[in-house]
Image (cartoon, one colour):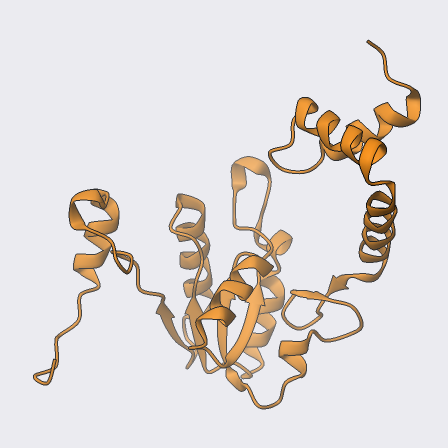
Length: 202
């Protein structure tokens, strides 16, 4: 069955979302048209406003609406401490921990030569400028543990050579509440390498 052109355009538009195939896109389109046109209008308005109004913070590359993002505007944060993450979702995850009060640098991806993604594509030229300016005292590498994430972390480490910048990597290992028998070997190896001494008062 062929859809009306506007319906087909709507279905096609939904397929740009990750994990949404033609069937899921059709189901969502039908639901909005049949049962929630008001919600569809709100979605269209919010989507249009976000696509036009949301930019990247010139300092950390996170999402921002006008100039610096809220984190970069907050002078109460440790200005010399920089946590490098791959996405805005990672920023949210770190913030929810309540343990970090520094700034961020959001790569919006990771190095992937196969996909044509080089250092400039993920803002590493901007990061290098910040390192060279002396504005960064410590970098926490919080990239993923994939091959690409590790390669990105190593590239950033190379940027700090011959500087006074201290570099650390977030701990990786057994998750809270996890049982060893269900942990994969690579994760367990990371946990063993990153082990810490237990204080006498433990």
